[in-house]
Image (tube, rainbow, N blue to C red):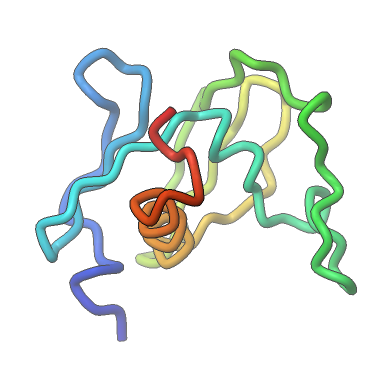
Length: 112
């Protein structure tokens, strides 16, 4: 069962619409730049299924990519329909939190 650190209390855009904001049940608030999330798509078209090596490269994703639609996948994930035509990645909430915690540790750039 998911704990409060991986359970969203609220999901939506930031006030200016430029980032995805997740408020977690443990009180943490995380914000994600769309291109950051697109580049971390976990689907088989973006990551080799056998090796786990990312096959998606920076030059394949437009700088201004954005989600045209966001869908819940059960109670555990989101799926985006991206402006570059991609839409198969399922992003578990645990992935969002791991990316944010990595960003807070100084090793990522989730919030731009």
